Image (cartoon, rainbow, N blue to C red; front, side, top):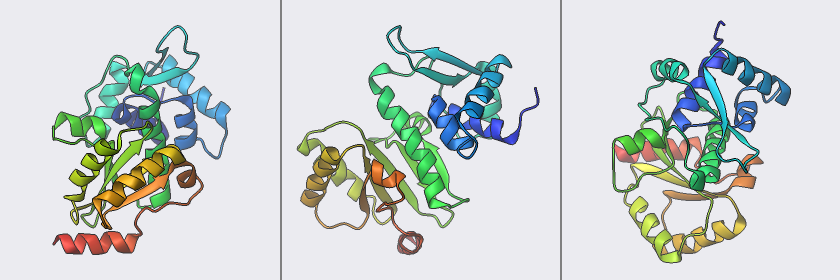
Length: 230
């Protein structure tokens, strides 16, 4: 089997994010073709030994997609990052982790910044730190955008503590919070109001992001922040 460039990018994304779903493959690589083409290509890559599909539990009807040792070896050569691979994703964070990958796919398309690079959480964890985000976008102009996806309710004090810590990054980096529901976004907004005025932290609702409406900083704001960093 001859790997196409799309296949290689699929392997790299799967490696960097830890796993994919069929929906991820469709949105990232077959959006203008159809779901059947996505499923068929995954099956072909599985038959060739590059991918494997599995269920996390007997009760789950959803399959996840991961790279095999062969696929991991190819993806590691294509990726800028070292991401430790798990035999199985954690069931308790599966929905959150799947949403992070969906956010990555949509954000990179929305930004239309070819020179922007997504640094996956797995790589960030490997290098340690007090506060590990769900991902970081590195711009060619030197700006960093920290991505935090909120898919569950946290206490007000916990959110305040996290946001206060992120605020210290400005102007080195922007922080983009993405909430999966209006209730979660409202909780984030209350915590941000308590933190105080700060242009470095932005809030978005996932449904609005998918619809093209987002409070992600414009390119001009990113350039200005990079200049302030210097």
